[in-house]
Amino acid sequence: MSLNKPLFYLLIIPVRNYISSQLSYDIYKEKFLKYLTYSGIIPSIAVVLQYLSIGFVVVHNNPSYSENVFKVVSYIGLRPVGLSNEAAGHCYELFFCLLGLFFSYYQRIISRSTFLLLYSLFFVSVILSISRTGLLFFIAYSAYAYMKHSGVSMKGILVLIFMGSFFTLLLGNLHIGGFNLFDRLLSTTDVEADLSTIERYGLAHALVNLAIDKSMVLGVGIYNYFYYLKFYLPDYMKDLVYERGFPLPSFNFIVQLWAEFGLPIFLLFMYMVVKYIRKCKNSFINEWFLSLFLFALSFQILNFSIPFVILLYPQLKKKII
Image 1 (tube, helix red, strand yellow):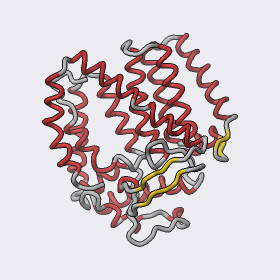
Image 2 (tube, helix red, strand yellow; image 1 turned 45 degrees about the horizontal axis):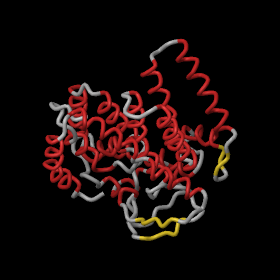
Image 3 (tube, one colour; image 1 turned 180 degrees about the vertical axis):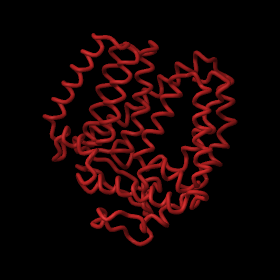
Image 4 (cartoon, helix red, strand yellow; image 1 turned 90 degrees about the vertical axis):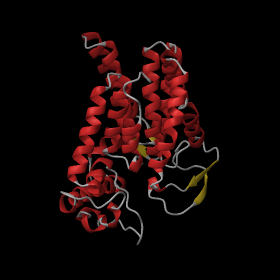
């Protein structure tokens, strides 16, 4: 991801401040949550259409995915990716629409029928994308949101057990793209389940070794980690071959920050993040950033923009959301 991101965020701050000053808190709160929720409709429909082999064209030119070649692909019969260029990317983007959906429903911005319709659409698109991480986050957050808003009671626990059993049975009987979805979900914890998990765990393992070896005081520099990473790859990645000059993904943005910033600056950054979140009493903002942090433990797509999103995001002294 290019280093012009900080400049971009700095330029849009005055625009954000002007818009927030023109809207009342109630209007801003309602419109933001509603439109955040509705923004997930089109990419979810795109996943369904792609699954039905209705043609799409996907443009690949995003360094966030370690792409270094511009290409246009006729997307017919391939794994659904929505409006992204990777299934995991679709689920990551859609997850924040899920947050908006729950908050919109429990704040009575949308009706129960709208909630159920959109939740079903979102969840179906995650299932069709065959994303293990996406499934894990959607199921876990749905359970958390239900318990948070219904309260911890015997009825709530029984409903959660019933829904968990239902989804387990459903996923265990669904086969998409040659995968049993329940087995695929469980394979998230298996390092050597397939090449995807080998790469994710192996690159994160290499990042930890790089950080310990070279970044206990000074880091290797922003987005320089992949110049060193090949020297720290574990033995179980021997079957994966990366072309010369190929920018290796990290799949763990948090450890990537440690390797790039160095441990002292990384700890200072994390202290600032915690301080900002503790000052903010708005549950939506806190859940948003906690979700970003959790995603960052397994997703490459966050990359270099996240520190600036966190540090420059809301003016916490104002009620923005």
